[in-house]
Length: 342
Image (cartoon, rainbow, N blue to C red; front, side, top):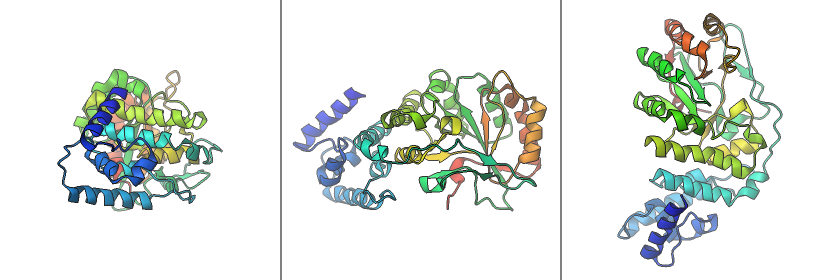
């Protein structure tokens, strides 16, 4: 990665004389027109028209002046500043560098974790509530589709892929048989052994999202560690699969703070919790597949974000009957980018 950034810098010096690479620091990014043009061009030819550069500069300056944090510090969202960088790796590196120059800002944010994610089960198939201890929607996060309509029943199947598992194949086979699309959250550990499954997920229309490098509680990690845990997965996913990762994020263990959700947001992600879950994560204490189906019969609700695990033998065995049941109840299965937050 350092070699790539050095090559980009050398190209910049050759083409633009004293102009810098543009994503070295936020001061350079916000004050130099030539830098801004280069950020968007990402190493394109020097013959780019001046009118195009001026238009791009205006776009970025507008983003920089409007995407401030609520606390009034003037902090800018780097995922917005660099959204026009075409090369995925260059874009990630610009965001990473900007955020690492702003560690003091992130350390100033509230990092008190009062609880892990907890949802409130309700009767009569009402949407689950939550015990959120601050309004997560203000930090680009959600746990249920609050805008689901009565005449369009929808659920969102999500599978956490924290650890490699060959059970993924049968899960994908079952989804394909039902023509159902799902949302997978993958770690780097999973990608290292199961990248072929991730390619298949993308080819078959599923979403593949970010679940950190090492599947640890991020609320107790440093800002630098958190940034790496998120962005390293994004880079690795592109390098292993040739696809860009879908920009949704699930924090391991469900731990969250205002600091963590702010960092996730600035990395360019929407945080996704859940409104329905199974006790399927303990490999030594798996539920009976019949109990998995029974849970869905008791707790299904419109707009549900359903948390399952890819390495669960119970989920693998019960998935066909679960999909058949929900289809019979009139539900369709959607991707997370359909959720519209208020």
